[in-house]
Image (cartoon, rainbow, N blue to C red; front, side, top):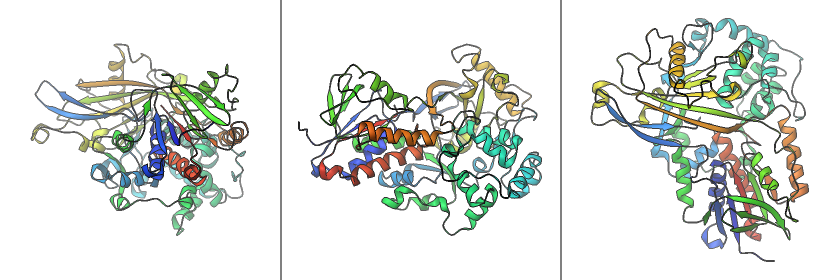
Length: 535
């Protein structure tokens, strides 16, 4: 049995687009290798979604406002992302937030005992005057004075929850107040079940370097000429092509794009659109005569000698389930259903220009886990709120001098759900928005009611963020071994459910998959690569 030279990328999420983009750079037209991209949904980009909407309110103010329903800002620490900006010529579209900006300096917590929001200190001077000093100072001293106590070594079987790790180092109050809030903002999950080794490996590295103290490890890492965490597996294989983008990111806290995060996925898609034949939906996956074969919903068949799966882990399981009736069905894999996923409700709110600020100037705030448990929390189950107008006002457009004359609209985004479960009242209920506005008013410490928003958009993202629970790294090692044993040496499983959930992690994952496939002789032997990306 022989097949035409082909590389197949299954899935058009951020991981799949990254893998396809980097593969296309290594497979020029003259190579004779054909590339196919398959995507089940009617759009590329996965959870990345940016929309521009026109808003107008009664006094005549109007603007074109950019809304994000997924990730909205990036930190300049992912070389894989900086490389994409350079290779796609996106530098002119980048919108940066300097470290000196209020959105970078002012971040808040919403504590139940406080009136309004509590500023997280970012300097020694602000720490000494902060109400959080009575928690932070003893916590830092407790860890800095640790000696000869438990350390998580390189062995992946040594693991624990984020909450247990932070409690051991900084105390239970610090772990709940700061650790659970941080996890809410990144994973929308319960820090008591999230794996410290999988979610925050840098903390394990600092603990080892500081000989049981994270604080001492961080000081040593800062003073070192080359921090231990600075080198990556991929960089040792192939250097990043960054151009002048690192200069653009000097002094930058976070960045986005003037047309939103979707700029990144759209430009990758534009780069690829003349190369692939696009079809929709995958129905089953099996192995025939040593080749991986899959069938789309339209009946189209593809074959591959190499498979790199980057779907949310339950999706490859479903593909295998639908292929069980086939005599050539692939063997099942362990741990595809081993982790839960968080569902998040995202609410974009736009308020009309106001003589008094809607909220304090800053990036936004997070809400820690309740002191009792999630069931005791307010029914809405808010995780946090981002003040989009403070950090990303440059994304919004105003006609003529309207913004200068009457002020700007206030844009913010509220995240709900995760470990709190579905909001109550539900987002479809007419009581949902009034309850949400009442909650925001209380969080902001306002005596007067919030003005009526001139735009509300609610989106519910089901199972959008995988939660790597304790023991995740061991399970993923076993999964990789099972893939090699049952599917063969030309198959791999990657993606957000295996590695990190950030956009940088996903882009890096696709980049590594393309490099490994290339190094293994994909071009030389015309091997066929199929990448499953989150949809």
